[in-house]
Figure 1 (cartoon, helix red, strand yellow):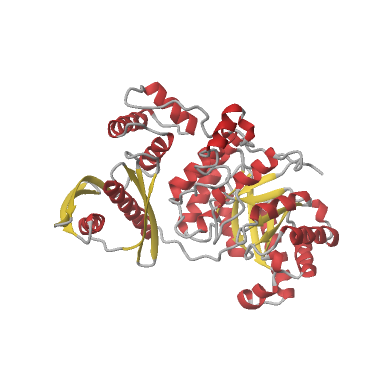
Figure 2 (figure 1 turned 135 degrees about the vertical axis):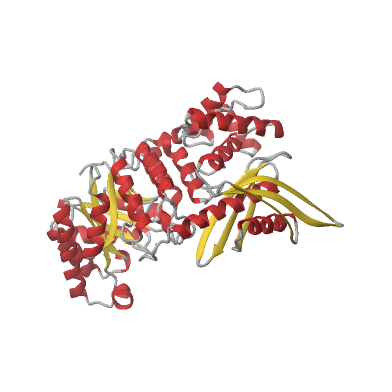
Amino acid sequence: MSNFVKIFDTTLRDGEQAPGCSMNEEEKLKVALQLEKLGVDVIEAGFPIASEGDFNSVKLIAEKIKDCEVAGLSRANIKDIDRAWEAIKNAKNPRIHTFIATSDIHLKYKLKKTKDEVLEIIGQSVRHAAKYTSNVEFSCEDATRSDLDFLCSAISVAIQSGATTINIPDTVGYTVPSEFSKIIKYIKNKTEEIDSVILSVHCHNDLGLAVANSLTAIHEGVRQIECTINGLGERAGNASLEEIVMALKVRNDLNPYLTGINTKNIYPCSKLVSSVTGVTVQPNKAIVGANAFAHEAGIHQDGVLKQRNTYEIMEASEVGIPSNHIVLGKHSGRHAFKDRLNDFGYKLSDAKFEIAFVKFKELCDKKKYVFDEDIEALINEEFVRSGDFYKLNSLACSSGTDEKPVAKLTLNIDGQIIAVEESGEGPIDSVFQSICKAAAVSPKLDSYNVASVTGGMDAQAEVSVIIKEDNHTARGKGSSTDVIVASAKAFINALNNLRWRKMHPKIVSPKGI
């Protein structure tokens, strides 16, 4: 059996299903292109039947991506499969990924169908998909809570009908490694023609075992792992791509398997996904967290300075985190700044680079030290989304112990400058009230968080907000050395995201696998 493990990335499908993580067409394409550069084998670009916007995104990605298979997800019915094929048919290597639940609890309460009816549906849907392409994947939703004999029957029908990849999802993150190992062994021993297909797993992280279960599956002969950047996904998320890949690489002595991933592109991909979704990576996240290669304890620092591998099992540069520590400041030139952007994987046009350089110089005038995280925050905020409808033009805010908080601002709304003044419970509330007044909107502020991107008295603040209106939810992020300005930027970013979502309503779709 080959020791090569295919990496099936579902950040654009399952990752996007995490609350507030929906991406627009431009953002999805940016991520897809970065995934292609990363070297994933399969990009699951979306759920084409879900909405017109999702269909268009999948179609665009299918047309632009050349070095990866592009998959479209569909439920096990003719309409979904036709729509998926229409979206991916122009891909260099298209894949139809269809699924239906096989557990008793799903059959009884969700599908309201008998086992025989489900087997008939599997046969019909896979045969229909196979008319379009020989690259057909079938998934048994909630496989790890399914009756194993029925699971084997379902897989057998799918194989006989033309499926070439069979996926065993732990849809609700219920199984544990020892049990998962037995399930896969049972399937391999009891299913006819199982050796003629690629076995895949798709593990959720509800018990924090998604990566462990995925690695266990590889040892049992599974040769495709479905995962996401930063572990994004439903509920507690999916198996984390970066953790699986680096576990195989760092402990290749115990995991003698290979992937096609260019690990130096892991960190840039992680940062891009974090930027477009607005979901900040937790500092202690393995591989890509801010603290993953940080050492504060004196003993650790002493050890690392004497010999890196005393406290580091991998080099930061292996995953694309710049290993140099050149300090950038107001005396730095364009060359040094461009080199740092290249280190992070940012490729800006000449015009955008000049804008970024001016912003960088402005930041240098405000801060004594400019850290790597400052530059990342600046670039991500400035260039993640283009053509915003609402833009902050100017802002002034006053408050104090004996002074009523007042915010004065001008907002550029689709080219028209609107000036307003509003008072609230405090300076932040006054700013938000002013923005709402200028934009003539009234969303509910659901969450407000502020964090220091870097240390020191001149630290750059990063504000994250979540707003809701008319059953639509949107996230926003903003950064500045002034927390009030950062808050305004975050709120305006959320308003732009909210407006986009209203213009591209997404049909509530089944959550899939």
